[in-house]
Image (tube, rainbow, N blue to C red; front, top):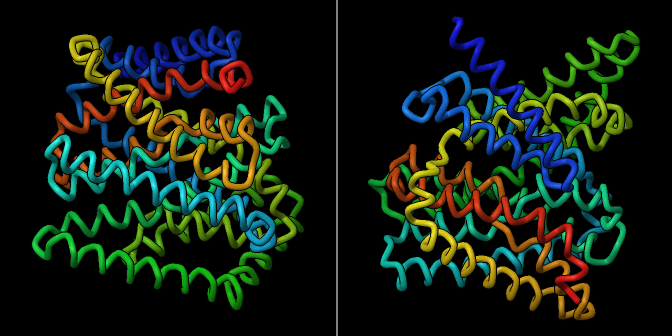
Length: 385
């Protein structure tokens, strides 16, 4: 008990000090949480211990992140962002996968499942780092900011079928082709369910529940109603074979169609950030600094290769209908590997689709990419020019 309290104190203290320093240099607090997890894992030997409660809290950090993404996606917003979200986002993901997959399969001699997982994970960018920067700098209102947000939202939605794909690939016995067919069928069913549920049933039920909670004029009652909707939908979707994240995402979309969406966003923000910080802390506990230092040249090589490919793909897509400067800024802003890639690699490793050593190596590549990102964003105008 005493050691646990000491670990909690050390975690809060180190995270606070690091983020005060990082804030001064306009570096994302996410990096501070990852570094904190790495430091604490060595101080208290967390990297050799399995902490189930920490993993559970981290998982619900992702659940609430998907919920907040769903809040941003009312049907009216999707219609307005049709070009930037659906076309640019789909092209970015598709072209990136078409390049990363043969590279992993032929150049690095990996098996089909590993190549698919790595290609999909490397195609994702970091909403958690890029979006706060765009909001703080007001660049979210610029042409490159709007295009970046559209692609990020599409990527975040794509996480749902990616996680489903990993689950089906883990069945193993049926083979990769059958698993892909299964995930496509189940994804289509999920989309049909979302549309029908939102259109005819879900938004009305949620609106009535939030209306009764709001009439009490008690913040804790309204907050309790939000948690009930999110967790209830997450458990429901998990029970019928989908992920918790998909359920939370549907809950967000349902609430986005009600008049309470702005209040819900403000009420849930601090809780989402708290849980998400625990997720990135848990990621930090898995970073092997000794391995990173001894294999730094290989990690940097893969990081540079992935970054250049993503810059090229995104620049090519945006350049179709935009000027060179906007295209380059968008490409630089989204060139990193995203935080959801940690989730993808962790799930793939736990389902034995990739080895633990490979997962740890991919963690390091993603970690380096996320560390470099704040410096790129802070100098994006100089770099793009």
